[in-house]
Image (tube, rainbow over all chains, first blue to last red; front, side, top):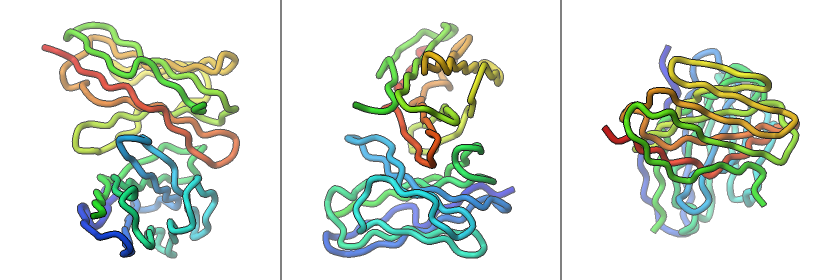
Length: 114
Length: 108
């Protein structure tokens, strides 16, 4: 089976712009979760989607949003980008919800905000 | 205070040594995950456990629910084990709390 894929892998944006990141889960997986990783804060949970419904959201401002499509692919959007949004954004997929299943991580999207 | 604390932050070992990384958590959990992250960013899930002990090759993970503590052991360490090891807790809600990671370097 193909692994979790994320596009794009690298992205450079300027402050104030918005960005959309994409995540394609492993075939058959219904849960997709998103994470932000920075040198200062480490890994932080953004949100989890299961069967097109957001199940939970981490402690991030409303500028961070996401959605999941009927084929389980997910997108994450960040509006009005700030310098502090520069990070590695990881998504992970699993058969079921986070607390019950092993997570399979994608390679990540490196976002640089100038 | 972080919900998940890891120690040590950095660890250097000689090839062949037995390694232990510790993780303590303050929330009630439904599962504890151990993750491995190599340079370049890719993350691999090593273990998910809610009780007892699991073993995979040279890796062993244990958890003590009463003490809210988990350990990851690497036997006969090898330079390819050099990576950042992260523990993560899924509390009874649907969150995911991460430790700050342990950077392991195994010297040949």
